[in-house]
Image (cartoon, rainbow, N blue to C red; front, side, top):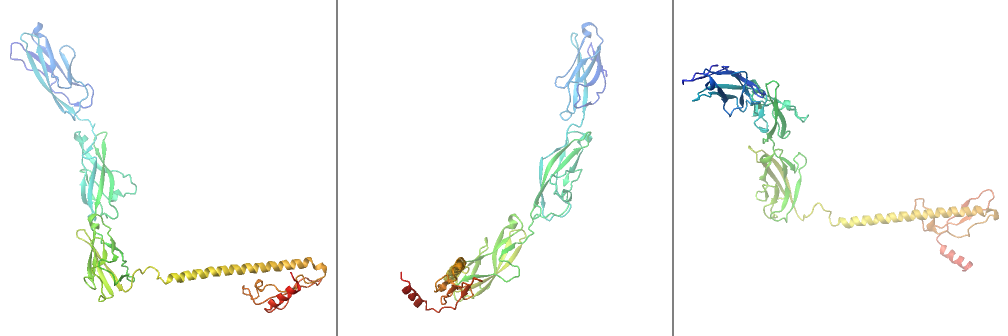
Length: 454
């Protein structure tokens, strides 16, 4: 393009391309424009100097005579600056010096060199329990510093790291705007929170993408009534609490134990006495469910009492359950679960009798074994002396009656004595048992001592 002539006596003319083509960012040294300058004067007056401002990333390079190239000093970044206004100044060397200027606008074209960036590295979204399907629970957002199609972003759900998480059945995402719509109703007691990652991808070539973490927290809804653990309310025989009539005010009768499947304040429980056979006799502590006597008991109070306790949570709206207690007033009651004092001596006596029986059985068995051994020893002695004439191997007399079992029941008799004689028959060697000797062994013993003095 031709630069305008100066109105002064001498003029300088500059010719160059009328428009500068867009320069792709991230490109190396690139030619922006090619132009020619001239001055109609001669000598020093016709010599010229061409320059541009200092605060731009461009430079002038002389080409052939009076031709200059406007080039970039290095790669440009469209995201920092997308447009430059270059002022080309041509000055002659005459006196006085004359100059002319021309502005060139340089546009920087976009290159897909920026990936989409999420506004947050992680998102925490809250989803109320028992939500309706297709409920909007939140959004994710990503921006791209590029322009045109390079800046257009689409969203997608990424495969979760937990293979057991059925993400496809829990949430979906709008590919255009990043809105997240729950697919089904969620139960806090079954799933309290879950995590997944979302991706944002631009439409450049090649496409660039980024990820962000999304954590969905299921907010508990008060959808569980309190459940009574004690006393059991299963339709079986009611549990009866025993209270001594001597109990003072504040006596602990029992404690109602309950839980709630919800969380937070939805699980805070309070207790209240709804009904009582005799109002004013019992009270329930609101925070721990302890049932205590409100005053001392008297003989005029009925023996049987029925209490109805209300257990209520702190949800909105609150849910509740009731439990029925049966109380029996008894006389002389202290520790019903310990054995009575009389039971201990009976048990000790039974244990002593067992020990005596064991000792007696052991004694009988030992004596019986000793008798058998003695019997065998005598028979062996008889065999050894059979050759000497066949006579009784043992002097006539008696064996102690406590050595022989004669009752057939495993016990020993003290009233019977036996004499044993070995027969000298050469054809057979056997014992012959004589008739029992009546208990006159004391006289026989005295007679034997006189016949065989010491």
